[in-house]
Length: 180
Image 1: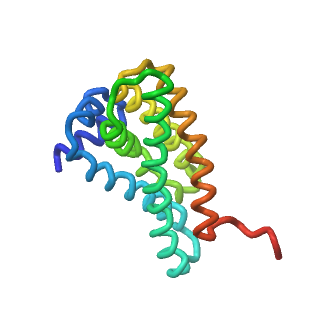
Image 2: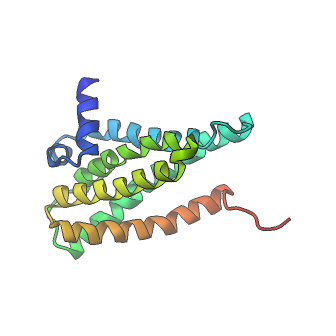
């Protein structure tokens, strides 16, 4: 547990040692999956404090949000890997990048604070920007490319993810209805 918490701090501080470890340690994929799923749950739970909670809606969102995050992770990794490896001359493996990006989702757990009215926008926006920055650090380190190339790869990967997220929301019926 102490090692897991140390790695969480390393992920939050963009410590390159963590991403070097992600390249060489395939066992880091399972804790990364936990981070991704907990981030999705935290964002969902953060939306409910102080509101009348319908149990059915809460339970539905508690499985949908982690599902969206779990789909996002390999999509981001695949898009960043494809561009970083073949378009930007990266040298790393998909597995290393996949694990590194999973750990980069660690700041998403802070979205539990969305329910605090004074912090709601910041509790959403700051972790999302932090996740992108951590993803850039993971991409640069695991693919052995410059920070500017990693930024291009990650921003392109997030653009791909937005399209995939829209399709997932559409498939799950999560898009808002504008009819009365």
